[in-house]
Length: 86
Image (cartoon, helix red, strand yellow):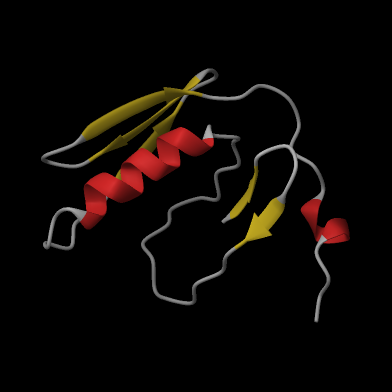
């Protein structure tokens, strides 16, 4: 995951076995992701989150949760050039 608030750029990479059917690229508001994390941390059960996307919105859902957010329009910066490799 790579994120920016317009002033700072951060990245986080976690190795694991994830059931990802295809790579999806989108820009999501930081508040949406913080809300999603808070909700998921409040539950003890591990749950699969489905991510659905169309041109303007993203939906995170499972059997107990539905969070919809408008996507931020525009291209994402090429973070590979901004983050040092070592």
